[in-house]
Length: 250
Length: 298
Image 1 (cartoon, chains in turn purple, red):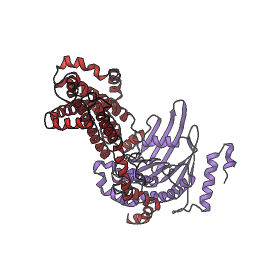
Image 2: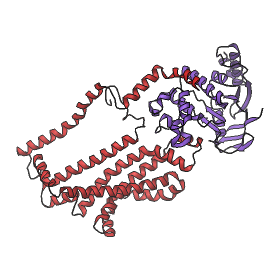
Image 3: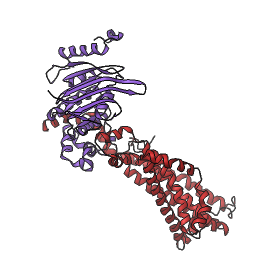
Image 4: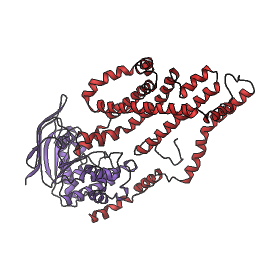
């Protein structure tokens, strides 16, 4: 099992505060990893470093065995908010990577159909609901078929029902492409539902405290006992060493 | 792929999506008849004040409450305008409009060029911005006497004055527009591997377009202001010249014709620019472009 991504962040600071210290992540090709941690633990920062959006840190990033510096075409990113370009139509947003011709690209048509927005191809982002806009953002993230797709709390802004549908959609779209996923989330159900593995981060400074494998068959049942057992395990890890453990017991 | 599209087609038919689609259709211009029927009286409401004022002044002058040598009755002003339209009035209009067009174009071109430069490069900003801020403190009209000496009394000083007037609003608005482009959108460009040139063309410029239009409209209204100033100072043609000529020959009616026409053409050119703005910025999700069921803003 060769690692697609190997990231070692020895140190990342904002001013005087050290956000990440010795955070190390390794992801095998085609796997789905969920990254969870308490608010402010640096999980989004870690993701942004891997994406190349944060370049000021001490450490190394390796993709496919080669060291990379900064942004890389094989790494895609889906943000917490849709971040659609408001002056482009839905189709132009999806095909953004291909330039002005992107709207007429066959991949755009295919992806729009897959996310159920074919009839909105010529609509402007301002006419979309939050869930629809995020579906466009997912289609845009998959357009150039990156090997590694990073997601920063991608479904935190939509309602619970839409979120579950989007999770199904994301899995279907990325499984048929064999895309490797690294998802930052604060929703434990989402982390378990999506992930082959869940990485739990410690806080201040942040680093990976525990890797919890999720040996549940897909499609996963959010109500199963196995699911609940893993959730309990993550809770314990998240609050290990803090006095509030009991308050959060399930 | 067809399997997934079947599964998610369910998403598209939620009540929420349907409502959104309906809204999109409504903003496309096929609004309900009801809304259209209600909007007309609102538009006509704007005519009430000017018409009432015209009638009032007409009656007031005829009744002798206001001396006719201070304010000719509106009917006489329109009569004078009708006569002049058969003669040299178009020439004056043409000269003023031409000067505005040239000066505005010149000032705008420089404004856009310099703002792109200082907005996108910290180095250029550090070099140029302090000087421009200092020059900005000088009221553009203060340059007029100097421009007359430097450039003579023909067209060049007038156009230069208008260009200076139009330059600053365009420059300031576009520069701050570029500086205030949402970092989040820039990151989208970076993630998609855009280089510096593409980032400017595909993210910065479209994102700064609303600010540019704000500057253009301010610049255009200042251009009309400065064409009058320039023509009042030294000119033999133009609406500003008509104003000073009317004063010297005590022709109040001619002065009012000039003022009326300046208002008309200032408004017309702004309306044109606004129409262009609406077309190019239809993507903005703002209060103005929102269509409420009642057929208008609250």
